[in-house]
Length: 323
Image (cartoon, rainbow, N blue to C red; front, top):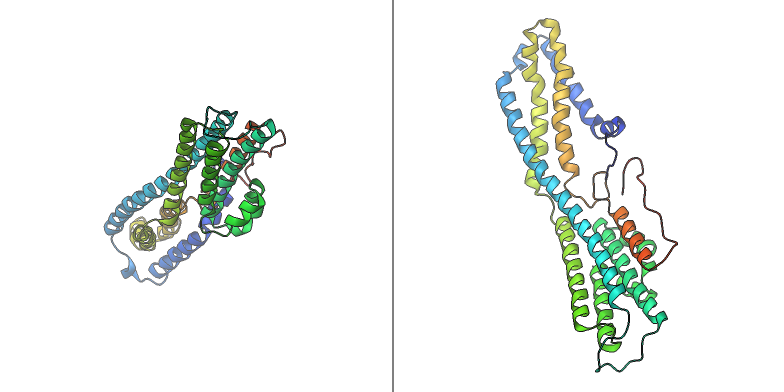
């Protein structure tokens, strides 16, 4: 996610230089044909070009609204992941504290070491789940599992689920299995506490499913493709419509067609590119949801709740981009 208030011109140029060069060359050729070569028949009335421009502006506006909705929904889902991760940590730390009134459970009283270990397992698995969801959305599980997920799971758990189709879903399953043990075998959860923790796991599943829905449902290609086609069609027609308007001001004014047509075409093309780069918010690109930074924030919060002092630092933007 780009975090600087004003986008640097080198970033703007990176995304637009190819199209600007094409528009510039096209407008120059039109002026050469109309002026020095004296082929006036290439000029077309400005009115149909303007009408097309109005239609294109409505179309790309509709597309950009849909693209932004996808980005904002993705950001809201990850905001929910942050909130429910913190809730899970608080519930685990405050519920799993001592034996409850469970006469049907024949187990010794939990020691302080066991409670500390249980807390760490429950919170570390949550950190592993967050990182696993991020890696799955970015298709990076094979590349970063050992660094970002495996350290928060036992070796057996990591080896059993790393090659599965949806490791994050199985991490939640491991959490549910531990809750059952805490309730039925160790007597550390009563029915109400167990239910509340299971409801939190349910919400985490819902949030993961929402992210997967955006990831696995591409932006409707009919809107994305025709938006691109219409913008370029309008941009290529611009010099033919503008040149006769400038010719009325004098023969030398036809060359003003070049800067004005390039400027207008650049504006329309930039709007289209902005919508295109917002279609898929989980691709680890400049305008995407900063999932790596969010996961780091969750890790810091949960490890500090465990009382740890050696926690990683928050991620800082790299070249004004927060990943």
